[in-house]
Image 1 (cartoon, rainbow, N blue to C red):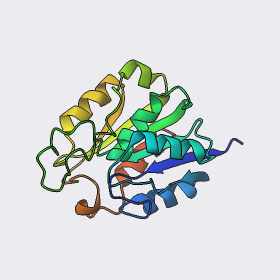
Image 2 (image 1 turned 120 degrees about the horizontal axis):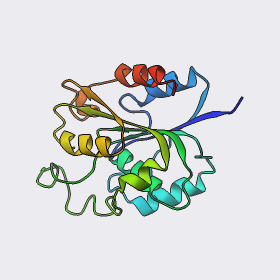
Image 3 (image 1 turned 120 degrees about the vertical axis):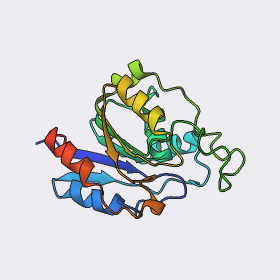
Image 4 (image 1 turned 135 degrees about the horizontal axis):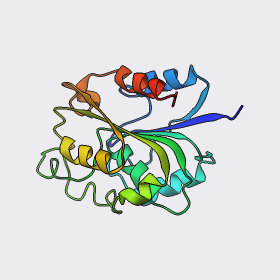
Length: 193
């Protein structure tokens, strides 16, 4: 039997032991997934080049993985899928997908240029669809940082599935959410888990 592998990438100022990540890791491991959930370097100012080099050096086999990213971790997954070296994957889960700075540009907690090195690639739906078998978007209906309509548009362009979490906020620390059963239920129904 082939090894099942998953990667979980946290967002800005996050870590792999925060929010719902430990719960998801447990869910995946309970169905025999090997899980790689690294602490991304210098994650206060996400930098795709630094992340890419870090992940390339990790020794992890990314082929045919289930990729899960939250916020800037979701952006990092989209960036990875557009590179030549990154292999095709089984499924991509983008949670609180951070596609642009439209809602964060004037937030008092965002530093000038904080995300300049994160949004370095355009996300061509045709290219992305060739890199993953399935796309899932999970988004709070009241996310104050990442525009739900932008996420829905990209989801539509990728023929993905959209899961809306009522009052989910950004599905990060401020949401208080420690699990996302809506996601695992959908992945089980689609036989991804």
